[in-house]
Every structure is written in structure tokens, then in C-alpha cells.
Length: 417
Ligand SMILES: [Zn+2]
Image (cartoon, rainbow, N blue to C red; front, side, top):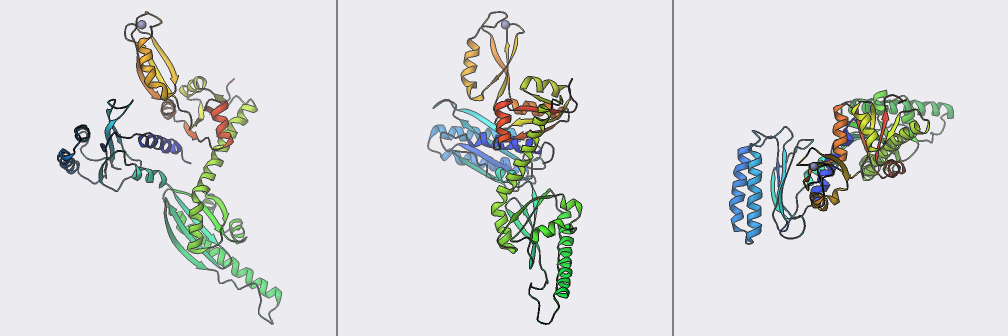
């Protein structure tokens, strides 16, 4: 994976998860997708129409909430002369906090990591996230080589879109020689034909896959041992060979074989990512176990090394769900940092306002800032050009990172003394 790619994916994924969990009291949550080529004034005009249509809504609260949300979106759109190069997505609506009557108007503005090509406006009791979910899935292109002794198929896979690029037949004679032919001569002819066939498949693979954008890897498949002979031989150039991420058995070549691979692709790619994640955590454990001084863990220590720019790779558990609070006193200059579970935030706000300031003893404590701990550490890492990898808890190593090291670990550039 490219540097920080796991982070931007992770950020979008988390945002979408949090948006997906929000539900309106009625049909009053607004989703709007603006593609890059759409004029802002057109969008605004469209929204004014929707605002007018909303006067027909029977429930007074719902009507008010929908119209308020539309107005908020129109206000926010005014900040843009035109949509960003990848378009613009906004979600807005009254979200219940704590039962009826606790709704608060919230707006979320997202610039998608890749261009969105749809324009739509929806008003529903949930936010419409599907086009963004698709972007999350469609970031990468994979090459597929299917090969057996008779046929070969080259295909590409991008998100859920599959395209067959080339189909070839081997022209290799069957295993049984014709009567009267000498066995050795037959073998020689056959070997030469196989070699020619592999060369052809290699040449087309190098050409086709060498031109792919966002090219992440190659999956080789086929029913028998032919795929291994092809892979091990000298038929693919080293750049393409380097991209092979999996070699799997399929029952078919041709489009049925490609379909088989696609049906397994989620699993294959997850497997690839898991093995990357395992290696990263194992590297950290190696440095720790061999006392090279290049391993660090825990929020405090890692943050310190990050600030000094000493971290080579920052490892964060996906399950690290913590909010960093800065609490301050409005009466004196007292300040305090606290890490809390975000689910406790609502109760905590009240509790803190009732606590005494440890310094001036007044009841003037407030929460000054709240920041998601992962976001905060990633920002810190970005500032110092440090690579960050967000590690799932789907492998033993990932679970160990979460449970034994508090979800935060680092491999340092130099051994600390
Ligand atoms: Zn104070």
C-alpha cells in the first residue's frame, strides 16, 4: 500500500460509518452530491425548488427541519465558487442526540478522494452514502492472468468492473502424439510450442498491465500447474512480476475463470492486506524482542518520538477509538489533557462543568477542544513526513497491537539509547 493510503481510506471509512449510524426523527435528512462540472448556481436553484416543495410536508417539525437543512446547505454552498475537482458532497439534518426534542442541526461537507459522477438530492430518514462507499471500493486496479495449457485470458478488475483485455489459445499439441512420431521429437515440438505460448502471454501481459493506472497487483489463476510454470519462467518483466500478489486455483480460464476470481477477490485482497499488516506488526515485535531500541509504544512515548521526527512507521490500531480532550478553566490558565471513550463524551461535558478547578477552585472548567486520537496522531505524523499504517484487528498481530500495546506503536528510524 502507498504511504498514507491506508489512512485516507480509513478516515473516509470512519466518517461513513459515523454518518451511517445517524438517523433522522422523520424524513428530514438531506444528502446532496455535486459532481465537479456542475455549476453551483444550478445546484442552489434546484435546492430552492426543493425548499418550495417542502411546504407540502404535513408534519410541522419535519417541514421546518427539512427547510432549515436546505437553507444550511445553500449557505454553505456560497463558500464555493465552483465545486472542487472531485466534486462535493454534503449531508445535513436534525440529528437526535438524546431522545425526542434533543435534535441538533448538523452539517457534514466532504470532498471525495476521487471524482464523483452523479448529481443527486435526497431527503430521507438516513444519509445516502452509497456513491462514496463505491469510491472506497474502487480505488485500485488489478490485473488478472488466467492460464492453462490450452488457453490464456488477461483481464483487469477495478472495483466491481471487470474487463477482458485479451484471449489467446496455446496452439500447443495435446499430450498424445500421433502414430509414427518419435517420442523425443514430439516432446521437443511440444516444449517449443509451450515456450512460444508463454512468451506470447508474457508479451501481452507486459504491454497491457504496464499501462494500467492505479495498478495495485496481479492475480494469477488457472486450473492446473501451468500457471506456476508460467509464473516461474522468464516471461514477465520484473516490474510486472513484482506485482504478483496471489496465485490461486480456479476451475476455468476465460470469462468464467475471471468471474471465479472476482467472487474470491474480496477475500484475496483482504488476504494481501492482512499479510502486509502481519509483517508490519511482526517487524515492530522483532525490534522490541531484539532490543534494538527501534520499537516504541504507548500514546505518550510515541507522541514524543513523533514530535521529534524520529518515527519511521507509525502503527495505529483501527480499534483505537479514543478522543483527546483538552479541558481548561475559564477563570485561570489551568489546562488538562484527557483521553476518553467518545461514547462517554455527552455525560462528561456535564460532569466537568460541575467539577472544581484544581488550581483556582472555581467551577469554571470547560472542554476546550476534542479531537479523535487517530486523526490527531496522523496529522502529527503527516507534519513530519512519517508513514502511518492503520492496522485492522482481524489478524492475531492486529489484536496484539490493540490489546498489548494500547493500539499505538512505532518503529523508529534509529535505535534510541
Ligand atoms: Zn481555574
